[in-house]
Length: 284
Image (tube, rainbow, N blue to C red; front, side, top):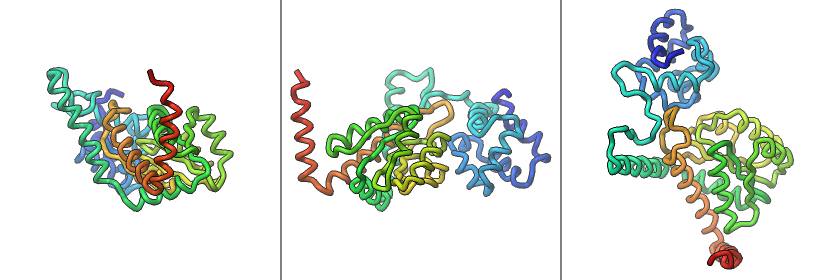
């Protein structure tokens, strides 16, 4: 279905919708621009319906699911600029200097949003879990796995029990062998991927603790996590994996790392010195 047809289709189908589906349609028609940045959980909440109703609404309009529907919303609207695949409202007519300024503003805004979302109690609880864990598996999917590897690398400079796990099958294997003394630190901007939810269910069955770093605290993944750490930055459907969103996740990771290290500054300093000594010979 062409992207521009989505709102026309909503209006055309409006009186065939159920009362619950009409709630979604009413919100969509009033908040066209904002909807493209919302997760399915957020849409269900603002429309006061179940997530299943949102999915059914999207299929009724001819889309495979909510993600395809959001993509159509992002591309719809007469008189609006076409979908922008770049973050920070960068346009083709911008000068290089203008582009740099917009990227800078977007990255700073992501960190500023994340700072405003930090929950000290959640950071403290996450630090407690990491310090108490026998093993901490750092996981994600796609671009989020890059962040998980970065987190494992950072924490490994001060603590010996952090491990990145890349492949989704290997993640399931490692999750199946978790113990109540272990923890999982999972990165997911959306908090709404199937493999992540399946893995978290396994981890919970095994009694392991789960820390989720995400943009959406009311996502399916957040419902399964013991602690949720929120990051800032909005992403449109074509802006997935933006550096700005990663900046927010890296910032909250850095906050958590420093909270863990300052609990035992002496030992942390000694372990980081040992790591630095071991790496010294690798530099020219």
